[in-house]
Image (cartoon, rainbow, N blue to C red; front, side):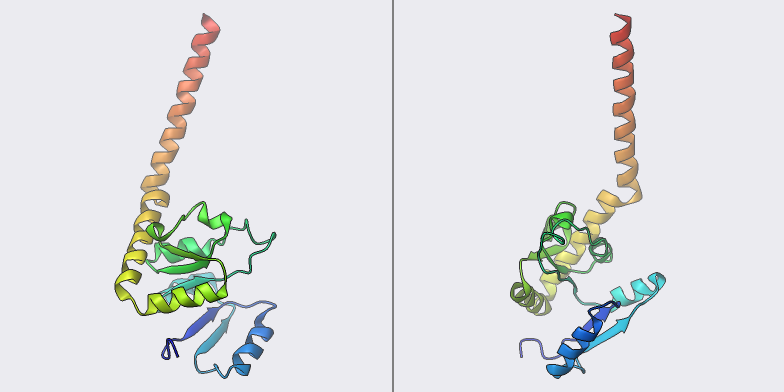
Length: 168
């Protein structure tokens, strides 16, 4: 086994749960995989803080390609190295390891990256710290305030330039 002591915690619920439970039982992994079922939003930080690595797997399709799974932003903000399917909806916001996310194309690649990260605490730490830094700088209050200030200054300049043009 590549990571014999690893545990998988699936937080949430949905129509795929019975099939997941069947697969878990069929593989004899009940001791290594737990499905929590639905959890209230306020408890999510507790679950995130249990994680060594966060994952966000998706089957790539026309329907999933452009979605934006916001939880990846939360993973990065919490300093968790994350392995995720490369969906354009999220890669446009968190482009890669320098922003806290390792992107993969399929399940086999995801498994390899998760195992690699489990075996590399230093790489995990670097990716987690990079994600937290990026999210705070880009999407924290200061970053949002700076973006808003830039938008307002541009609007004021355009208004002034328009007023000058109409008086000439």
